[in-house]
Length: 142
Image (cartoon, rainbow, N blue to C red):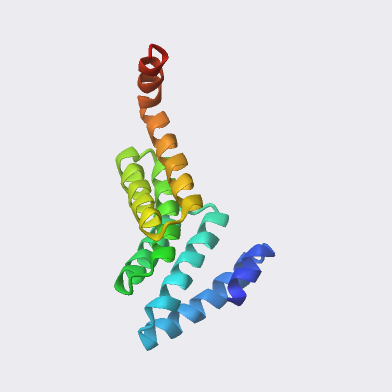
């Protein structure tokens, strides 16, 4: 998508405009594939602008569209980012749920890199919960 190139060039306003047009077109055609990408990229734009609330909304809608067509890669992208946003917002239970969803999809697809990223995200959640200290102290005595 041209919008992704604009994001990489830090032209967020242009990317948002392009993505909104793409979103309107995909909604009119009922095209969940394009719709899911437009929502996720609008989420990325929102994050670039520091609006985590809007980013969460966009990524959630992107995940809904991806679920309609069982688009695993988009679900990974959305769940990973939703997990990060939940962690930022201190919603540790939801961060854990999204990280586990992403891990399951990655395992089903056999994507080692994505499985490792999900495990990293889970470790971040556990560290935020303080579980890491408990696990570490119990492992020290093994």
